[in-house]
Image (tube, rainbow, N blue to C red; front, side):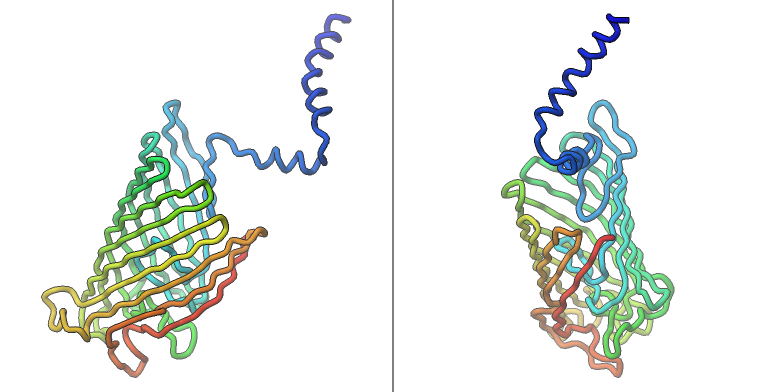
Length: 302
């Protein structure tokens, strides 16, 4: 009995020493322990990543979910949605770590409107190579508007479609994304996209397809990030008037986002900060809509 008691006291000595060494508040200690991340969990912001499987050689399968307000500017978004749209963007992605530097992913995203049963569904498949400070990713994506009806209006006189097009039907695009990490808290993001947009029959532009090119540049430092996205659209080659200066539309969007300490997010910017080309004048308004739209958005994670 005495021997068992002596062994128990000996086993408790390290815990006693650790308790004496900790002189801070108990709540602070609990917060530090909770802040420690398991080695199978990768921090993904602003989404959540959940590991599904991990092999002994470091390969890992992970599920990521994300939600953000509709219309928010993203440095890697080939399509743009109007900032006056009331709705949300839900995305889910499966990531598979093929090796220490190579990762494959497949995901879906849904853009929805709060006052109408219309949605734009997107999918993407790609891979990313990460070499520490540098990373490069390639992917193929597609987006489709559910149903053959035009996208809804949220505010009078506003055309909330995709890329200023209310007759958006579907799109396909090839995307390239790169990042250079300046240090542990800052980096530079570059993106490029080449794709084709299919319009619904009977649209106001009188064409079936538009070619689109997009370039993006982003900078982040701690909680602050900024994005500059430029896009060019024109009727696909071979269609009448495809290379006419009046049938080529260019625009630049700019936005700054500040991630607040209480899980909030404040965004300030402008869509179509600069634009060129002559939209078609229609009873419903210009098509595509290239009106300059300043915005201030606040999003709170609950």
